[in-house]
Image 1 (cartoon, rainbow, N blue to C red):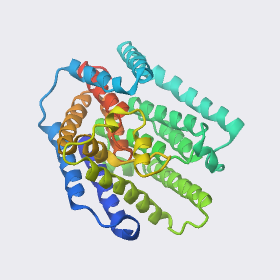
Image 2: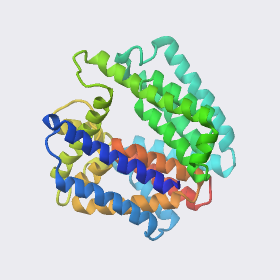
Image 3: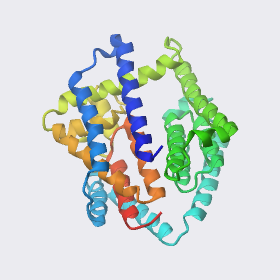
Amino acid sequence: MNPLKLWVTFAVAYLALAVTGKLVYPEYFGRVEVGALLYAILFMGCVLYGFLRGRSLPSTMYLFLSILLLVPLGLNYLISGALVMVTVYVIFRTGLERKAALIAVVVSIALVSVVALFKGFPIFKPELRYTWVSVPYLIAGDVLAIVLSIQPSPVFLVIGLVIATLGASRTVALAVFAAYLFRLSFEGKLRWEQLKDNRSTTIIILLLIVGVFFARYAVTISENPHWKLGFLGTQLYRLGSTYSVYEKLFEMGMPLGRHVLLFTPDPTGYVGKLFGKDVGYTYTIFGQPAYDFGILGLGEGILLGMALKEASSSKVFGTFSFVVATLMLEIGIEAPFLAAILYSSYLGRRGLG
């Protein structure tokens, strides 16, 4: 299975499950809005069109757009983004990516170990998920996803999934798992025969992933003793909830958008406030284009598809870009995410990775 087909599989499965969540729990979410569903389908079609038919832009245009996206977020984002871009460019230009990856794994394990030693694990202390203690787990998971984009080792994947379990983080689990799958796909190794040949490794990985979701479900139960939904019902509820947020954003953004989410440093917090909450709300990959640009947001899908295609010139940056695009299915498009994909397109076109 090639990377594009793998991403489409994730996207279609996500949309289908999200809509199913709404249909299963109409008492919570109401009916499925046809207009929003059509927009979501069209957006995915635009991504495909951009990947398969879109014209190539000059590589410097992707660099320019990646920097431009960070400007409205403030000086801190611009400076930190520039430092990351320069560091990544130097590492790959000098061929030090594998050494850097190994160092990053060691540092990530050490970071999580030190935090756990003094503060404990979020899986056993759910209240830690809402403090700074959860941040090192997320950082370590993100680092492992990047490392897997460079070197798809089952050992690194297992380390990432263990960190995800201890941190009770589904996002980290999905990131490292997606990175492993997409890198195998780029190498032409994501085939049923090879999975069967490595049956033991495959089973262990799948059990760990399911374990992460059960760990997060256990945290939900401990935080809400009166929670009545079972494990599968909880997963559908979460998907339906996020999709319902998107439907609201779609309604508010049509026809020409409100031009906010892509230009604010805390889009999930902004969306949460729209619903009268002080917590962040995720809004799916369709929410930001619909709310910011309305019907014109479909053009953003074309740009995303073009960027994914250009990034795919490199196995490393193609893998990384598809991982980010996969995470955006649930979280939503944020400026740093889109900037990362566009910068990956620039590096891919430059022949790095």
